Image (cartoon, rainbow, N blue to C red; front, side, top):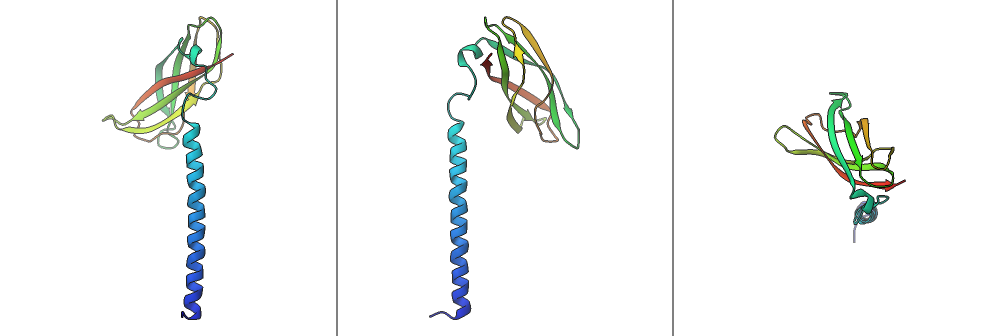
Length: 146
């Protein structure tokens, strides 16, 4: 049999093991739910309208150099639909000078683009990025129906 201090140590070890396994189970459920909700089409976007919308990155720069490091973009959105669209959503990625991926994310521009019109979304603060971000790429994800 074990001594009193050894038994206390075993009980503590079992409690820590239970706590760790409980934490890992919850973490797995949260991560699984996050991955499953990101599968399929983008929530809130209209696939049919998105086919007739073109987006381009006109210009960008990094704001808050050495402190915040946030890309500020000017994105032009052209709506070739017969109905207005709103809240264009993009994915973005930053790269270093050699082309190595540094950061990526999604961003939704708030506003409406009238039918058959072009709208410039200027001063769009996309998110925090790495200090060495030299290149920015954006891809359209979709738009919402007005």
